[in-house]
Amino acid sequence: MFATRVRRLWGGLVLVPVLVPVLVPVLVLAAALSGGGASAAGPARLALVEASAWGAHWIELELPRPMPWRAFVADGPPRLIVDLGTESLAAPDVPAAGAVRPLRAGRLAAGWSRLVLALDRPLTVAHAALSEGRLAIELAPAGRGGFADAARLAPGHAAPARAAPPDAAARGRARIVLDPGHGGVDPGATRGDVREKDIALALGLEFAALLEATGRYEVLLTRRDDRFLLLDDRVAFARATDAALFLSLHTNTVTEGKASGAAIYAPSQIASDPASARVALLENRSDQRAGLPGRPEQDDVTLTLFDMERPATEARARIAAQRIVAALVASSRAIRSRPLRAADFRVLRAPDMPSLLLELGFLSDPGDLARMQSPEWRAEVGRALIRALDEWREADEDFLALMRR
Ligand SMILES: [Zn+2]
Picture 1 (tube, helix red, strand yellow):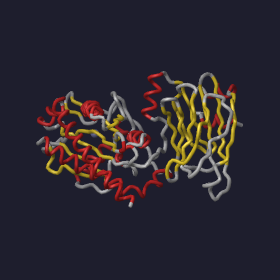
Picture 2 (cartoon, rainbow, N blue to C red; picture 1 turned 120 degrees about the vertical axis):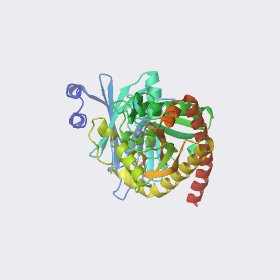
Picture 3 (cartoon, rainbow, N blue to C red; picture 1 turned 30 degrees about the vertical axis):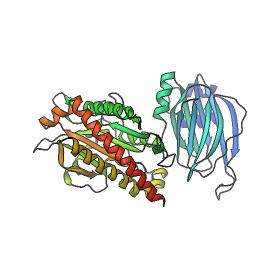
Picture 4 (cartoon, rainbow, N blue to C red; picture 1 turned 45 degrees about the vertical axis):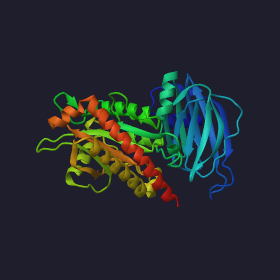
C-alpha cells in the first residue's frame, strides 16, 4: 500500500518506478494527537512512515486533516522540523531506528505546533508535498557545506508560515531577507551591457555584509549568484525563515521622458500613481520573461489564515519605508521627487511579513547609472539603510507592543 502511495506521490521522479519495488519501510508508527486541544472531530491520529532505498530517504506524515505546514532542516545537531497548523501535537513514541527519529513535539504559537525529528546524518529536504492528507517529505543526502546552506535557506517550504511571534527575533539580531531582483535567464532592465540583475546582486551582497558587520542583523539572501528564482519562491523563502523584513532590490528604466533617483515601494493593491502601477506590472512578469508559465496566485489555506494580519503588516512596512526614505534623503540627492510609493508587486504579497521593494535608480539616467555602478555610492546607500533599519526596529517594537494591548 505504501508503495502504491509513493508511486502516486513521487511519480514525477524518473527513478521512482525503479525504486518502488525495493522500498523498505524501516519503521511505521502512529501517535494520537494530544487530547487537550484535540479537534472537535475527535482523537485524530498522526502516523509517520519512514522508507529508504539506495541512499534516498522519505518520510510520510499522515495528517488528521488538511492543514498548513512547512518542513525544513536545522543545524547543530541536524534536525528536520515540521510545523503544522494545529493547536496540539504529540511526539510519536518510537524506538530509535532509521535516519529520522522524533525528538519532541509541542505548541509553537496560536494555531501552530512543531514536530522536531533528529537526523542521523546531514539530510536536506529535496521535495515536500501535501496530498490527500499525507505530507510526504523526500530527504536527500547533503555534504557538510550543503547542509549548512540548506539549514540557512530552509528549503521545502511550501505554504510556509510565521513560526514565532514577530518580535521574537528582535530581542537578538533582527533577521532581514534581501532579495536581489531577477537573475539567471531574467536580466531585468538593461542598458547596453549593464543589467539590472547584476546591480541588484552587487547591492544585495554588499549590503548584507554591511548589515551583518553591525552585529545587529542576521541577513539571508534569496540568491547569492546569477540564478533565476520564481517570484513566489522568493516570498516563500523569506516567510519560511521567519524574517522580520523582506527587502527586494531593483533598478528602473524609462524608454521615453526623464526620470531619476531612488524610490521605495510599499505593498498596496491600489497603486500610488500610474507609473508605479506600470512598474509593478512589469516586475510581476518576471516569471514569464524566463519562459515559465505564470503560476496561479497562491490561495492556500495558509494565506487565508494570515489575511487578517495584512493591514498591520502593511502598516509596519510603511513605517519602514518612511524611515528608509528619510535616511536616503539625508544621505544623497539621488532621490525621486516622490520617493515613497506603493503598488501591487507580487513579491510584496506576504500577508504576515513586512515587505518592501527598493528601486535604486534608473539605468536610463546617466547620473543614476554611474552612481549605481559605484561600490562607494552603494556603500553610502547601505549605511543609510542601516540607520533606517535601526530606527525602524525601535518603531516596529513600539508598534507591535501597541498591537498586543
Ligand atoms: Zn526589477
